[in-house]
Image (cartoon, rainbow, N blue to C red; front, side, top):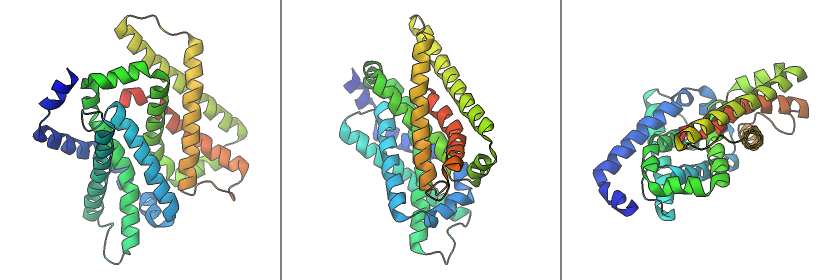
Length: 279
């Protein structure tokens, strides 16, 4: 049955899917394509950190291709190629957009241009993969993977969701500004609010799924346990993104770093909790 569905998708369907991916990339990444901190990041982030970010993003793209993706075929080779295509879409869309708004104007060193495109392609490629998620929904193999490998599927999708939401604000100065103006009580309250929103979203997603399947809802203890894991993933990824963009480091201080981390974790945790709705 699955192979029959795969054969039904013609090259024209694939081309349409890539076009839809470009549109999805713009929808997700347009604010970042117009954000100067992202332009600066192309030459302020070291080459090693930038390459590491590309590698991490490619891992997230593989997760998206595994559970949804640009193409219905779910072999390892096809998923790898689809992830490359998604990132390629990111490069093309970023280049066209930055050229049109004159960010890539004359006089900029080639290494800086490459840095800008590589960095901006990260959120665009994520949006491209999300836009193609209908292929994954149609594909029986994908739904079977989600059902049979629930623990790792949820964690992988939480990581992808945290990346999508986290990178949208991780580069901005507002993360540092908000973090530095938090008292310990505000930081604690923000962390609690983050956990509450994660629990609420996970419960809503679980309610929808169990209502459709006619199964009883899971106990609150399971929801809270899952929420702790999801929040931990969001915080870990937030720390990595803040380090990548130079928002926290050895000279930031423990107290300030924790406050900035909790601030970004507020956004990233929402994406992690809502990942199943996005992917």
